[in-house]
Length: 480
Image (tube, rainbow, N blue to C red; front, side, top):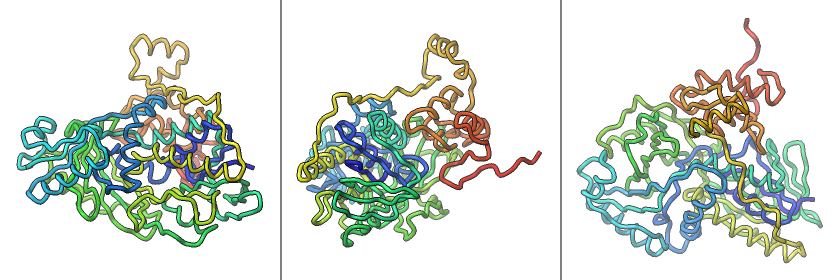
């Protein structure tokens, strides 16, 4: 019997699981995918929003501002890349200037620090590549960029290190309420738990309806992106938003924490929650925005395109509440933008809700003296000094073998991420943790070597190494 089961190992679920691991509880983290962070978390804008966009008085406004201020400490503790580069909302005409004035006032109401409306000259000092017909912009100094899947993976690692049990490839198909809690059917397994926290992303409505009357519906919304080579990474210095409209925050142009340039997303309502196609129309839309905003951009430098599905709801706010009449079932749903930024604050709030539920059920909820807030730091070989590199190679010669030439990733780093808690078991799992395959050739040269290392470290046949999810086989048989 588990005390609490968290369904969904995306950014919200992993933050909650890690927060709960501070307490002397028996925690289970379930996910239907083959790895953590395999839903919306692996395909989003990677922005830490300042907090001026969310409507006053909403959960989004409350948790965005609080979450933003938590990122420095969390990313430092978990050794996750994070940079406060600031953000701009651009205005190219009078109407857009009125919009950014409204955003500024909303930001003041929401408690966002370090904001100001700046003129063309000030904008050009920050962003020399923006077209000179720009009239003004809202500048928020606390805006930032982060590695979203790296953060979720680090949270899962740290949660497991602190006693959380992680079970993957466990799609929840049934939940039954009993006298002593719930019985969850997930894959071929069943689990008993006293409290459920539903963080199932685009499937949160289906999980809720396994035990409750329908109270909300997830409306999937697809966003498409272009990722550029690092040669384009210095075209902007800040997160550059277009002026928002009824469709959303608009297309964004931003540097990534690893030195690339990211462009997107679109905002398209869809019916299929698994439809992650990219389209000519969608990518053309975001490219046209970049042409209208920047003086120069090289579209020949796009190295990959992708899309992600966001979980929107009709209320346009987060749903964070106990199910009607149930102290032991907490829904955390509709976590679209700024969900990544809000996630650490949501985890604090949900943990307090879980404490209240536990108290009403006679459960203890005591702080754990042995909680370790820091995970073992990742090894980034090329960032070490020459002396440190030599010392590491002397201890382990695998750090002297470069596997990914685009990103300069060594065999030692790949072995490290495979053998960690919640470690990589697939080609994309290694890519998200250590970045081989993330460069210009997108794994064209290093993928076979990474597969060989995975097969060796996991003690499986090379043909059994997967690209990502179950069934995503790369090799079928030997040809010669």
